[in-house]
Image (cartoon, rainbow, N blue to C red):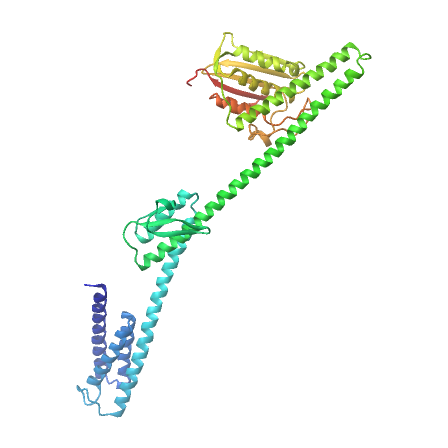
Amino acid sequence: MAVGGCDTLKNAVKTVLIMCLVTVLSIFTGHMGVENESTIMIFLLGVLFTAVLTSSRRWAICAALLCALLFNFLFTRPLYSFLIYGTNDLMLLVFFLITGIVSGTVTSRLQNEMGLAGQNEHTARILYRIASGFLSASGRENVVKKAELLLKEYTQLGGTIHLDLKESGKGFEINGGNGTLGILEIRDGEPDNSQLLIVNAICRQLGIALERERLVADREKIRLAMEREQQRSIFLRSVAHDLRSPLTAISGAGNLLADSYDILSESERRKLAVDISEEIVWLTGLVENILSMTRISAKKLVLHKQDEVIDDVVGEAVKQTERLLRNRHFEVKLPDDVVTVPMDGKLIAQVMINLLENAARYTPPDSAISLTVEVGQHLTVSVADTGEGIPDAIRSRLFERYVTQEKEIVDGHKGLGLGLSICKAIVEAHGGQISVMDNVPKGSVFTFTLPMEENL
């Protein structure tokens, strides 16, 4: 049986039952001596109940007509006849019929409006949940998956979302601010009217969510571009500052040596020459770090690995920094046996140079600095100093670029804050790790490890 036919049968049964009930009740009150003016109110209640239970204006009017006939047949003279002799009874029936039709119509309309309001409220709740559901999703893939889940949950329909229009077929368009973003294709047949409202709402909210994700991605690109530009500006300012200081020192020492060579003592000339040499060595290291960072940034850091004797690599690093370390109590601890490790010797020597330069720069004269090499499952190299240690403010960012200490340093060269980030990149490219810890009771210990074998 069709849905409409089933509803008609149900309404007919409800109407008949109500008519039977009001008839029995009115006969009972009639035997109790109740006047017709009061009895007819029972039939009016029957009309109202019919309108409420069937929510149909048509069945309310039918109930009013049936009640009028029943009242005429049972309570007006002559009894058990549809004839009416009394004018009062005729007027009573006319007014009852008008009141019944009007009240039944109003009641059924109110019922329909209440039902429609309830349906609208239910739909509004679903639309709110759909809109809220997209707020918790981030990323294009998650947003698309969320849309498919919401479609299945609220319509019981399966769907596929095509964001690439070239691969899409027929379906519901997903529109954004700049046009169509994709297509929602329903796999399980065509949606009905109630489902169609939800499908359109999902498409609309999906378009908004995709636009939001695009804006977030664009904002992230702008933020990264601004950050890169800021880093570039910091880098250029730092390079200019760090190049100017040693160049000024070299120029001053050279001019003094040239203008006053004959009046300077032998020891003074030697001191000026040593100062010039140290500044040139520092500049060479600075340029080498800049070139290394350039290769790392461009992902062009190439390792030329071969078995290197660790003693030779340490010796090269110490040789490059011996003038910085000459006023410190410097100690080197090497393994008793000759140890070879696969590495790019030049880059690992640069790591040691950077660590030793930092140790010399942030420790006062006559302080202790040590370089220790240990062999185990990995090659472990440690550089320990007895300086002031690492400030807590920069400890977590110590191996990032352009991170430097703000405090005064020993040799007057602030540095670009690239050395440790270069060390980290070189060590990790070898498959090792680098870390820092406190040197109890004073100072810091930088430690890096390297695999002993090529395949580890």
